[in-house]
Image (cartoon, rainbow, N blue to C red; front, side, top):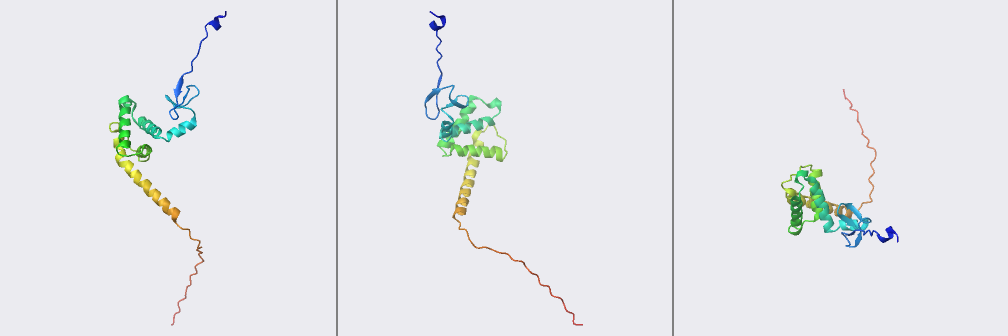
Length: 170
């Protein structure tokens, strides 16, 4: 009897669960955009990003990176998540809108992020302002689409200036 055949090592592949379709897949063959986040493939990942869970994850990732490293603790993460869920469930804000409001506040307005206030420094004011801007933009686009195009041609010709000489009667 062979030593290797007697003591065969069985390597068990570790399994992970896809966040979107909940299938069990091999960890080595799974698509992982970051640590502890596994999907069957990129298409599954794209579909998941469109769901509320995916949009909440994107919001939390973005806000988390705004905090200074000394403030990046598990209690801070839980606070951010509770704030986001409060605005989503109680106030009716959408996760994608919250994400855009925070990006607008930080990247467009170039305001400094204050670690002490969390999402409360941005969402009540800027979310509603951005929502109003978006609705105005949609109204303008619909007006533009509903305008009739005129087929009249406007031709500008040369303009002639006539000068008269003054006659003196002396």
